Every structure is written in C-alpha cells, then in structure tokens.
Image 1 (cartoon, helix red, strand yellow):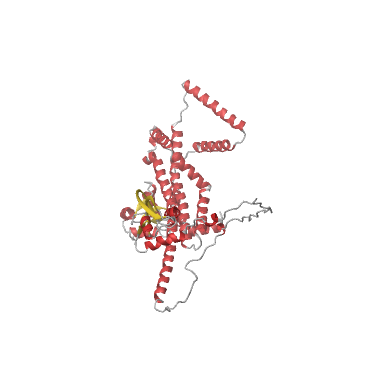
Image 2 (image 1 turned 45 degrees about the vertical axis):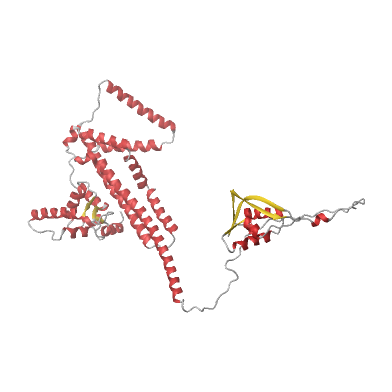
Length: 478
C-alpha cells in the first residue's frame, strides 16, 4: 500500500470517513439495523426518518440525555451529501418522495466492523476443502490434453463407484456436527457477500450512468460520435471480468430449475439438527429471492442508462425542429416588415416560371444514318403509257381542321356529340373523315363512347348522292 494513496483514501473514501466520524457508532448501528439486517435495498424518506427517530430515542433513553440533538431528516441529508456519501438519495420514477439506499463503501465499512468481533467458531477445514475444489476446477478447466482430462474423469468415476459400493454394503460416511456447522457458516457468509457484490456492481453501473449524463449535458458534437463513445464505455464494462461474471451469475440464477434446486437444498439443510443449533437467520431460506431483487435493481440501472440515451435523441430532435420553426418565423416577420416598402414595379424578371430540364438519360442513343446504295438502271417503258392521275387522287384528311371544329363547338357548351358536329360542320371527305373523328375520340381528345346507344350520320359524296352511317354514340367533352 502506497503512503500517498492511503492519505488520499483517508480524506476522500466514504468508508474511511465513516469509521473516522465522531458519531460512527450511532451511524453504523442504525444503518446496519435498517439495511443490512433485514436486507432492505431501498427505504422511503418518511419511513427511514421514522426509524431513525426511534433509534435516537432509545439511545437518548439509555444515555439519560440528548446526545444527538439534530433532527432525523437533517442526519439523513447529511449522510447522503456528496461530502459524506454514506447513503444514496434518489427519486424513483413516478414517485415524488425521496428514497435512500446504502452505498457500497458504507456496506464495506459495516462488514469490516462486524468482523472485528470475536467469532465463536472459526472453521478451517471447509475453507481448505474449498481451496482444493477451486484448484481442481482451475486445473481441469484449463487442461488441453484430452488424455489427461479422460484420466481425471476415470479417477472420479472410480471414486464414485467405490462410494456406491460402500453405501450398498451399509457403510455411510457422514459428516460430524462440527463439519456441518462449519460448512453452513461458510455458505451463509458467502450468500451474504453476494448481496454486497450486487451493491458494488450497481454502484459501478450508476457511476457509468452519471458519467453518461455529464457527457450528454456538455456534448456539442454529432449524435453518432456521442453514441459511439457511450456504447463503447458500456461495452467496456460489460466485457470486464466483473461484467462477464455478473452476466453468467444472473443467467444461472434466472434458471427456474436452479431456483427450485436451491430452494430444496436450503430447506433440507435448515432442517438438520446441527444447523438448527446455530439458530440461523430465517432470511437465509429465501436468500436467492433477495439475490433476484438485488439483481433487478442493477438491471433497472442499466435500463435508466438506455432511457437517458432515448431522451437525448428526443431532445435533440425537438431542438432541431424548434430551430427550423424559429427560422421560418424570422423569415415571415421580415417579409411582413418589408411588405409596404417593396416597389410595385417589377424588380426581377425571369424567362420562364420553371426551368427546362434536359436529363442525360432522356437522350436517345446514336443511330447511324441509313445510306442507301443507288445503282443506275435504265427504265424501259416499252412504249407503255403510265397514268399519273392516281398520284393526284389521294384523299388527305386534315386532322387539325377536325380538332378545330370540336374546340369551336365546345366553346359554348360542355359536351357535344359527333352527330351534332356533322350537322354543324358537314362531312366533306366521307368515311375517311369519320374515321379521323373516331381516332380523335380514342386518342387525342377527351371523349366518351357509349356502345349502348347509337346515332346516324349522313353526308353527300362527290357525285351528290346521300350517304348514311350508324355509329355508337360519341360525345366530346371540354
């Protein structure tokens, strides 16, 4: 132990400060009776203050005077202050009453004071057997040679076969009462130490939670960098020896079969005569439920860490939205302030209301032009006369003219039928013109074709004869 380290611990460590306090006897006796003896994890402020009032009353009665003049709540606030750190004061979610929990350092001090007393029975055989068992587990668990491990298992099997044979012959090797009591006391001490370990693990996670809150409060970088740093610290704690051991212990304890096995073993041991002579604490029968409760406190600490991260993300999103709304309001206010100052004349002109887009993917691929190969040949007419009148007798229907007829008809009405159009604008080119009207109705114009109704159209051909055609009802709409 380093001298400077001890000087620093004497000044700052809560356990040392508790042992050196003037009221250490009163504080230690009360905290042990309220938290350690009943294995109470958290106590409300009113309940704990009431218990401290009763404790101080009995001390004053025994001393015959007022030895501790301060109020119980004042003592609790002093013990939970940062300067002392013997109690942890916090507010559970959804509760406006303060609660107190024993600090891990305080529990260490109380355990050390408890061990100062003269123990009536000091067992050494069970500790030695525990040392042997642990050494065997280490050696067997780290052995890489398959032959050596098989040989060790065969040796154990031989010992078990010998023991089975002796029991079959009526020879029972029983523990004497001293061995039973010794092993029971060691088991009880180990079970209580596990509760202290839970407080230490919970303290480590709460320290991480406090660091995360401080980190978030002072962080001005990006979310990704902050989350990476926070999860890195959390993974680092989870991957330590302490974190892996706690996770393995919790998985083992949460097994229903292990819980039932532990309950049956505790019932069987507590019924033994040598154990009953020790008058053990009745809470040992449900010590595994106390482990579960203590483990849940640690799990809730981890849950609070995750909740803090979620709140940070929500707060950041709210702040970003608030900033956007503030910018929009600033723009609106400036626009309203300039509303009467803007010149009515056009101060800016643009070529078009929207830009024309020319996407590169809209361009067609290059297609090389077709180069026809023309060979000169002499056409021989052999004196045959070719009539050229057919070239000038082709019928051409002006589609734009028909569309213009439809639009002029729709200027004074919402819809018009093809029959009405034929009467207002007589058909001049016969069936070819009718076919063009049909094409406009199905492709280029807004129109409806009713197959359940029909109408008859008539026109005069080039020779002056009247022609008729019956078509489905066609209606053009504006």
